[in-house]
Length: 333
Figure 1: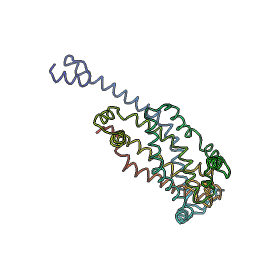
Figure 2: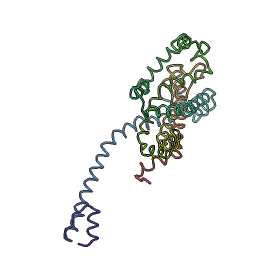
Figure 3: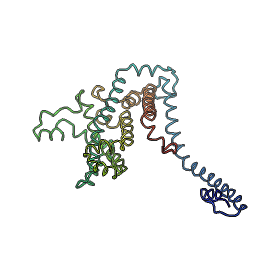
Figure 4: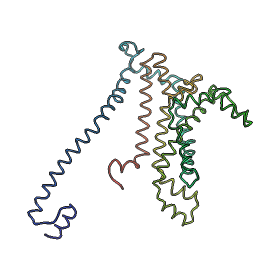
């Protein structure tokens, strides 16, 4: 056997042997690989089929049905018969209430990135350091996320009532001037809901960023400290760049969640007062199920889906592409 034969055997994992044996070995491996390939395909089919069936039934079929009903003037009783084409879409886009709902969703998304992200990042960095009672503090930060949206909304609805726990707390510390009608003031209700949403979801962001911080090598921090970098310089030039993929995932989830915001708003304000806290999702439910305009509500639901879908595609194309390229293609460069 030549050196090339030994090198090839070492590369392929085959045991060196006489020439005849070398010719027989690949045939056996090829058969084994074929059997593994067939078995892998069956495993993939077995694992993916239930999820694909559920996805098709509850996502694709639902979207197709919404698109179909959106072309009818339909009140939900009996089959739809009055075809109106794109009239529901033009009506929604021209409705000031729907425009206000879109604006509220965008305000929520902007506030999430501008306000929630620094708070979440600061809290995650704090809880990632050596701190007495760190485990308890992490548990306290994450507990609101475990609560359901309905429980959170009802609890805060009671506390924010006139004369409720929030007002009494402010008066107790001498801040009577800060007492407001938190959910009845048209200029304040959206920010009140944002505070509640921040309290509810900041724990999820903290846990997500803490997981990302565990992937920052300690050697890089130690090297930066040896080079004389301050804590702030180490965080800004070492930790934050390595935490970038996690932050971008958080932004994506936060913006999508803001565009689909429903439960908290619906339970606490029903989109009021006078539509000042309405979102696209509450607008869909109000028009579809409360006013029996199912055709029109379907058109608004399709618009909401289109907004989320376009944002997801653009964000994937311009923000997440370099983070997911290696995972999707198997390349690590």
